[in-house]
Image: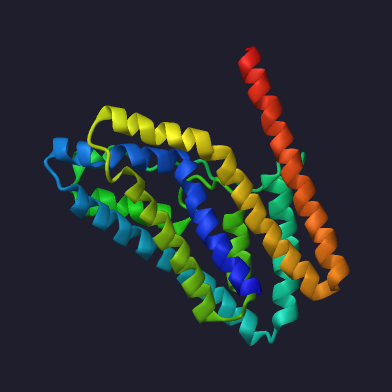
Length: 255
């Protein structure tokens, strides 16, 4: 069950990346409208971007696969994976739930948008894609990224670790399709308006995916009691996040 939860986590974490400064920048920089003005083909540029993100995911996967080899060589079994995944999932839930005092590194690094004016699509699109797909070379929007690596390494399976990260990178690159119909400034504004409307939902989805990993891990280690306790933690943290966002929205309206 943990591997199934990890797949869900990889997809949700990848989608959450669209709300990062880099993700938003890519959805504005690589569009049919922008590429036409540059004299380039959007389909070609988007293909290079997607391929770059696949390679980025593969790069992350290769590092995680090496870690998995070490875990396997040490003879650490399934119980080790469950404990590590469960503990990191707990930290991830508390982090993304904005519980005070719990934080993981954000890595506030933006891609270099000057590449667009200096290089051809094969360079800037593939380069941007690799940075996005690698997961940790630009802004990290969710602790799910760290949890994904923890699951991949602690699995002790190089193939599973590589495949999980490859899925993550590929899914992040596929996000560029959201701008595939942007042929006017109005449509670009509509895309970003949609993202604004669904940002809180993306946060909740990440928190739900992390909670799922926590429930699976706690259930496997401690049985039904552990799963129920993890469920309470996950549900409580989601409510806490929702309430804190409502307070922030209310303060913005008053301001």
